[in-house]
Image (cartoon, rainbow, N blue to C red):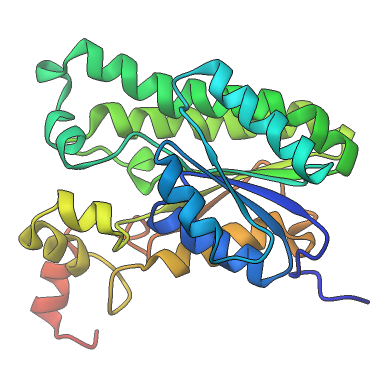
Length: 268
């Protein structure tokens, strides 16, 4: 029996592959034997990073542009002859977006629509274009969402609600295509120390989240990549329609756990 965690012979697309979690995922999948497509709106960066991985290619991708998404899937199949894994990892992020995405009362409609166009519709279009090819290979989809999709917050109303929509899309795809051999799962990171996050969130806010994390540090891109690559592999062959929360336990406990920790002692 072979090592089911390996991805030898498989072709994987990682959208947002030029970013922190995306490139960590592309690196890990490549190391486990997959041929990887790094798809990103930063096309030049995607092509540069692809040169670091054997047999990888970089492709331009604008998730808000339906034709761009469909062309990315088609080019992958033309290049490699198949598609086994689609990692819908890309999302509308960045310091300016994070600063503008606050509560509903102050929400700009254009930002709301853009967030849903990229995050939700883009994920749907990519999945729709990939599904015929994934049926042929009995492949799978892994969607990157967020633990903010499971919790209310003071900020990021558009981002968090769009990620909640993708969780339900994950279940819908799993239910409607499972009998055809296609699995679909989601990974929900917590605050992860990517360059984009470090640029968007001041240290005092990162410290507040770290205090509520059950581990001794915040997550790194490699931590999330491991969860994504596992779900994409045959080791997870009996897992579909599921959400794997990968946030260091941040969403799993009672409110104010850090205050309880300080009251009872560090090691309680």
